[in-house]
Image (cartoon, rainbow, N blue to C red; front, top):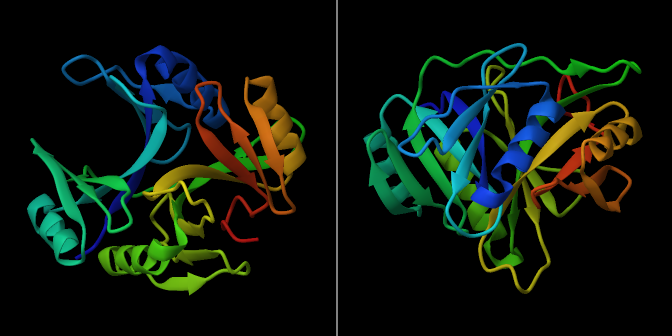
Amino acid sequence: MTILWLTAFLDYPGIDFAAGTNFWRAVTTSTLSPPRGADGEFATLLPSSGDAYLRVQRIGEGVANCHLDLHVDDIAAYAARAQDLGASVVRKGLGIVTMRSPGGMDFCVVSHHGEHERPLPALWPDGHRSILDQVCVDVAPHAFEAECAFWAEFTNWPLHEASRSEFAYLTRPSDIALRLLFQRVEDPKKARASAHLDLASDDVASEVERHQALGAHVLWELEDWTTLRDPAGLAYCVTRRRPDTGTL
């Protein structure tokens, strides 16, 4: 069984949907697909190269968040495998099963439509490059090992310890656009795992300045990454990883 593609989904309440969508269109130099869904609540951000791997959804309530879609050739079989590994079914729909990981993060199992080409990093006028290339799963310490083991088993991707002890990551296949990183988060209020987006850039300061000009706000800066909040309230990071390989 093989995961054929990953898509990151940005879920925004209606009042924030336009701001969040417009921001990420600009960040990724994407165009927006026609809306779809019963109420026009879904859209895809179409990259200038490669296949799409970022989508947006207008939700009726709650706060902005991020979830993963896993594209497969047999939804029922993969949903059953996820359950065998400890996930639970939240709901079933036509061509989609919404599930919850052992650590509490929602994700969806959906059909594959031939996506296979990773987009290229963007080259900006000052010469620096960047790309949105990673979903980081934030997990409470008590659930960290089980969550990492679940995703490694479910994807069949090798699991590795990172250079910092609070992180682990999976090695993605060469034709998958998104990496999966796991972060142990020491937050006593964090009852369920959640996800955020990471960008790779060879000039973090220039990339952060570009995002600020588009309406993002810096939350904090560390040696290897800067955490920001987009205009719709969603936190994400710009990291100093190589845009072509995703590695430091």
